[in-house]
Image (cartoon, rainbow, N blue to C red; front, side, top):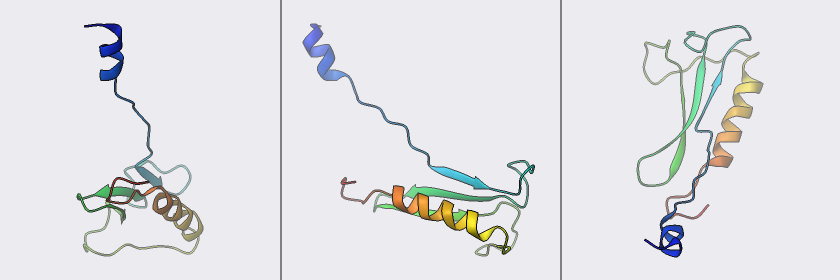
Length: 89
C-alpha cells in the first residue's frame, strides 16, 4: 500500500464528553445522591437523559434546591453538545 492510499484510509477521531455526574462534594459516583446527565441517540438525533441510580420509582428524579444550579448547568451543557440526526452539527 502506498503512503497516499494509507493516508486516505486514516480516520479522524474526536473526543466527546457524553456524561456528566452531579453529586455533593465528597460523595462517590455510585452515591444515591448522584445524578447523571448524558447524551444518547437512538438513530433519530441526540437527546439528553437525566437519571439517578438510587431511584426505585422509575420515571422520577429528586432535585434539591442546592443541587439545581449545578444540575441545570450540566443539562444546558449537554443540550448544547447534542448533534442533530441528519449528520450536521
